[in-house]
Length: 419
Image (cartoon, rainbow, N blue to C red):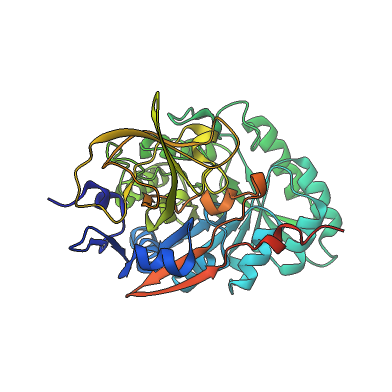
């Protein structure tokens, strides 16, 4: 019977006869020797297939629609480049994501910029680069853009609206409810829309809403469409992202097809047929394509059995931020029965540095490789240098070949900004 971990890994991931995991045609023990651990391993073929799935599902149903990847989920230049090559636009939230998107070869006209606290510098980068759409979150965005856009030009903008949709996700990733720091209530949005429509340097193109992240029921995401329609008729309606990704054996998020069907049914009911629809998948676009590979450094069998690995909250903050549950397995011992309950903890000097609690594994030994699937979203994004931790590499695997697209930080990197 196949190991259940394969359910959470890209199609084509295998277990060799000796119990060793093989992803993208590469054995994980070979990857560990070449690139060290921790390492984020990305199945490039799976990443491309997911981008194609999203693009086809949307545009086959509504040609005047486009998919824009929410770069914040995995803002690596190589990942952005894959999206560009697969015909996907990019959503960027900050100057660094704009610059990496440009390095990835994106047509600036296909960029959508977000942010509730955009700086003057970031907006200048956006204007100078000729970004296609800037999503204004507040009147201060408008003030700055009117100062930055050169005379004779007009910057296309969307207005971010709070759709007043309460989603069934963790409070830390809810964004569409009254009181959210993102966007404007309907009354405030109408006032800002009127101001933009009178501005000679801004061009009002449409409205945007986002309900939240890691949402399993597409009906909650589709519920944002009617509030957008109530604001008026526009050329563009950006419906955001938020579809949940599968992290555990028990989770079963909606399929891409079901998600698109729900959004487009609401669009058909409420929005003009000629309007362009934009969606912004992030987590659900990239999460399943990657795993993180760790080495077990200590095993402490006492009041509880603690299995400590050589990473933790320095490369995965999802658990500490909103108690995300993960699954894992010993990547070279997948043929062995699980016999003990353990707590997988990280190396950082925090009691909250817990990766998985509990987890049932074979009897764990120091030096074992631990594979944690579903780490393509927000792990690289939020990696940090806590306790002098060196951020891990990102490694693409495909057809038995492996290449680092982001190298591991060096000790020298930690002090590169010292003066």
